[in-house]
Length: 292
Length: 301
Image (cartoon, rainbow over all chains, first blue to last red; front, top):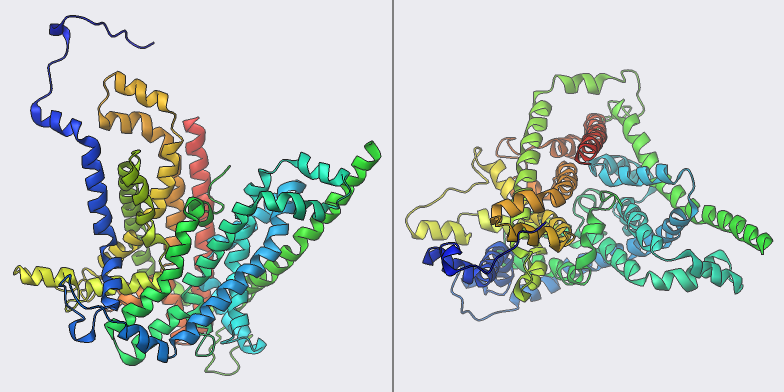
């Protein structure tokens, strides 16, 4: 029951708040907005600083005047070194691993969503365990095995390792999307003469398109961002962009302009992509943790 | 058409098995096989510079016995605990605070959400580099500003007393958006009526948060904490770029110690033993947390 607010005489109203508090209440919304912008600038300061450093001429690399003549010299220097090859390696491994994980994981996620097998829960736990296990537990055996399999320092080796987290992610993330597609639609397709997988491809898959896109993008981001596996399992041929940055830190020292430019290039794709999948990010990164 | 329906069911079943099979096979090869290999290696004194140490199971428990008496290992576990607890608490507090600030309906705050999640999606190595810039005395705008106003601050990452704090700050910065996004999603699920009712009854902001909003986001905070706790055990790129485990070994967490033993000192058997214990620890932690939160949920209901 809510209290009845009586339109009583003026004297019965509560005393007006002191003016300062009054002002605060009135401008509450605007103050919140100002606070938001201020905090955002503060939080993103290190990020913005690195980007601006990448455009500063070497002579003035440490400067902090807001006005300076931007230069692309650092980017040009990167272009002539070994960096483009590493960037390409990152592209190839991330894309290939994403495609492979989707090709294997999507049918499995669909089957787990629809089948109601008794072992479904066990498979789900197994997938979750893969997500939880520390990478060091994978890198040691993979490193040792790759020496015998000829996969050390190869793109294929890296693509396989990235499946350890991408496959688990696809299976976890796609299931709820398939759960959301009504079975009746598939049955209708069956009555029209489609097989199980044909119905899946023609009916279920198009309806889950946003989920597919978000899952693929998150797979790409996770592979692209990997540092540890690439550091350990590659040397020169297959080294990815994050490893390349560390390499030239080790060989040429802290050349800030070049490092800032390389860092900016490496983060560019993920920042753009993550804006596309903003709404799915938590589901992807917390895959398995949100019980539904 | 019952006969057709049955056929539909049977065909579906067969197709589903076919759909799951490749994934199970691949997962077995890339997860179970390495796990077995890891545990097997941990029972040997494998050292790639010493031939004959592979598959030498003559003293299977040797690595584990050594670990029990390795003060550097014990210290690494303790450093890990400090790092994990500090970053998880930091992330929860900052993430919750920013989420509450952004929960408003204004356009600016809706737009700002995309900006605040940037730290989380950046490649960890880039996060390491930009904090390395912030912590380098001669380059960092912060350090130079402090020097300019006459209060020079020594670099955090080279000071044994502050290096771990430096990592905690960077890690908190990187991962508070995770909690923020989860809490924001939970806040949007809160129905409007209890909030209005509380406001009409004259509840102040703190009371509304504590007694109306908090019960709705409690379980989300627990889930976020679990995730970040388990992921904090994997901390590597930040430490690699910022301190390399130093100065001394004050930022050498267990993960880093295992990496060094295996990849730097070539003590693969010993490194594998540490990694095996880490996996066991993560699983025990997951199980315990699952039980504890299960109890908490039951009590809340």
